[in-house]
Image (cartoon, rainbow, N blue to C red; front, side, top):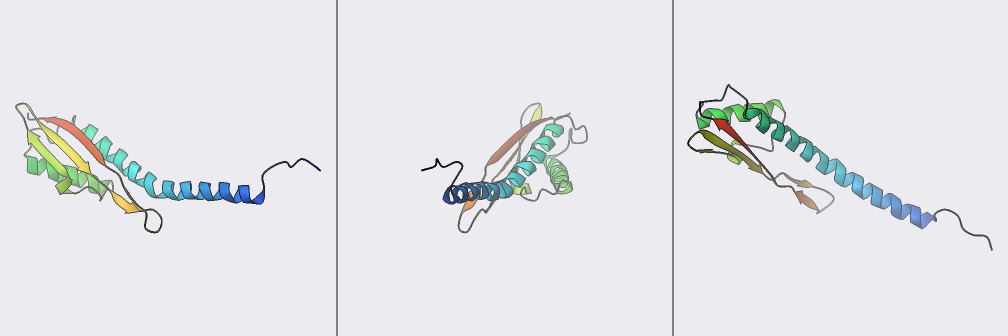
Length: 121
């Protein structure tokens, strides 16, 4: 009897099924992380943005919302943005949970929270 070399048909089908399942998950979840990277970059840029220094919380929310729309990020709304005032600065927090479908009845929920400090003057 000869020694078998390589994989059997059933082994190949199992490997292909695992790879396809992981590819489907990646296709649905990777865009969420790419959007979050944009949100994170926006929050980092707020700290050095001179246009919002000394602005009111309402104006700051409008600027953030406008920048989010320019970057095609619609999973973050004004309700996800909170602004707390301290002595010398504003603490801006964006906390949101994008949700979506994976396969059939499987859903995903991803939680993100970003903070930035903006000087009052």
